[in-house]
Length: 283
Ligand code: C2E
Ligand code: MG
Ligand code: MG
Ligand code: MG
Image (cartoon, rainbow, N blue to C red; front, side, top):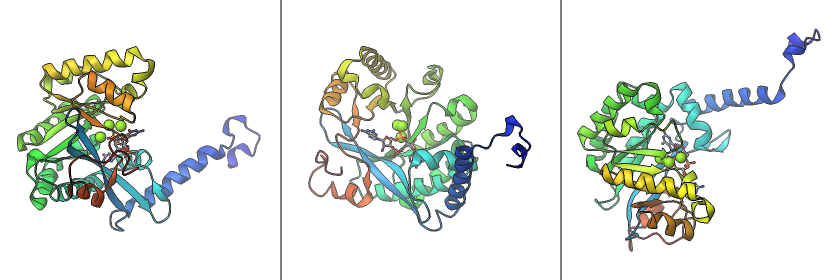
């Protein structure tokens, strides 16, 4: 503040900038102890077969309920965790907890775990996957790792090597939020993804009046089919969107239409009767 005391115009005080930097510092401080204070939990969102409508898997989504800050969205704390490398221990916990929960489900139900670029560049990443599988007893083919296109921008070969180690273990690798990053088709030639997840920005409203979105979904599905990859439509909320992505040939559906991310106990309870989550049950 002192610099604009002399009337200099270049150093005007910005309360909003200052507040967000301070808030960030506070959040980081709290995030450092979130693991040991057991403030993190996982929610699970069902992924459903597009035609048979049974649950195929769940995506694990981390939640942080901070003593000081209350509920903080992953959109806010994941980038912070990435910048501070706290994502490495947090990600290890997520992997392990997701595998442990998956062991309480029928043994044909898989679990998907989001992994950041910072985690993949950590030399111990594949060891932490091996460890999570060993501690939980989960079969490797029941674990799918979700990565976004962004990981290939920075250090293409290091990330790929790590993912190939996971594939060699038997895990699947899904390409998340497809179409939103620096989409380069080059790595689709180099990496055998199990699944391409079509970002919800293409899915939502596509049914209404967006021929471009429809054309893009159609093209992604055709490409995935011929590369022997499945496609998941993300963010399906309405019956119209469901009908559309089904017609376009997406093989799997994820979105509020079938179920919101839910606590582990609720995910487990879906298997007490049948495998079709009641629509809006967890909403
Ligand atoms: P993502 O991996 O693409 O996860 C899907 C996000 O879309 C989730 O947000 C989910 O709640 C939301 N979603 C699902 N269906 C619908 C729908 O029908 N409509 C709308 N509007 N949204 C829907 P969430 O849980 O807030 O997570 C946001 C992002 O944070 C995730 O995007 C992922 O990139 C990241 N993230 C979450 N958990 C983890 C984690 O354990 N590790 C890492 N590295 N990243 C994570
Ligand atoms: Mg994901
Ligand atoms: Mg996604
Ligand atoms: Mg996303």
